[in-house]
Amino acid sequence: MQSLTGNYYFPKSSESKQATVSVVSDTVSVHYDGECAFVIAKEAMKLSSSIPGVATEIDFEDGGRFIASDAKQRLAISSARLEGFENNKPLIFASVFLVPFCMWFILAVGMPYIANKSVALVPQSVSNQMGEQSFDVIHELFLSPSELPQATQDKVIAQWNDAVTTLGLPKNQYNLFVYKSDYFGPNAFALPNGTVVITDALIEKLEDKPDAILAVLLHEIGHVERQHSLRLVAQSVSNTLAIAVIFGDVESLGEVILGTGSALVMNAFSREMESEADDYALEKLVTLGKSPTAFSDAMEVFLSLKSQHEESDLLQYLSTHPEVKDRIKKAQEYGLFTEEK
Image (tube, rainbow, N blue to C red; front, side, top):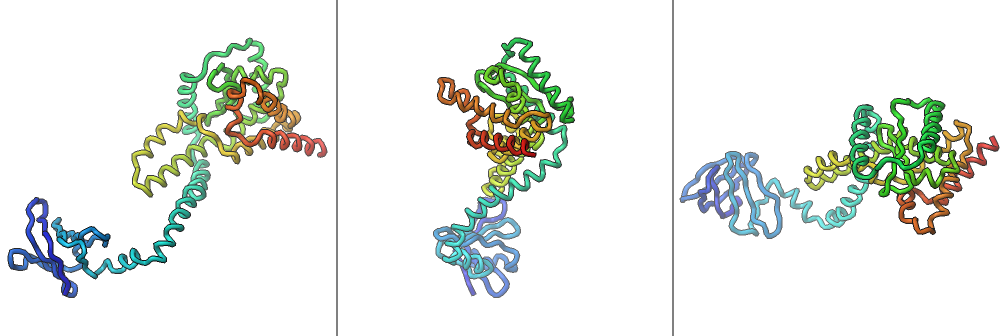
């Protein structure tokens, strides 16, 4: 027989009594006031985990609870196996390494894989809504009407329309807008619904290289075609969901879902995504009868301006992208390869 002394707390009441819990075979009895109050089967009670320095607690089906008065008192019953795991030093040391590895695998491999696969199932209406909401926020906060001559804007937009038509892209989805932006500086970006924005500063830097402007815009189309924005959001939400499940912080999940739309442009694509968009731009330049070196021309302009006083603005376009020199080399090699063919 095993027994514990402590206090028994009555169901749905603050009343308690000094009591003794006894375990005999498969039954548990509770005694107080000098007599047996009740007897139940062991399966009908819930025994707390054995934690050093914490008193044993027993919960009964009717809502009653018993708390031992001595934290060292234990019942060697159904929790013995669990206590064995908790006291197994090799297992404890192994878990120190296995738990972080499992968390890394879930967040770095498992969830991104699931997120990327799930993006293909997202209806176009979701992409449209995300793009529209994001554009409204960005337009309000960071964009102002273009100050370029209308003829310059029309030239860029006409080249864009010709490319969209030739590549067989849906005209009702892909729309180009020209804006002035002190925040973005020389930049271009795309939203999930196919809206593409190019700034005055970028057009000015590449005005004498129209094919270079087209190369940058094709790069942004590549982000849309490869669903990079949706993948970015899906990975962010899936990682937050995984963390919420692991650590119990479910409230933050809703905040991430609500905030992803307006944060799309503020978040950097991965280098892998940027390389995919580069590949798309190089491939489509060839399809349009343009030289892939037009893309390297665009990168060369940025690279040549890195040492000038406006570096901080220009680097906003390059800061989250792969190494510029590597991208230039890749475009030049792609051009040589296509010429040989």
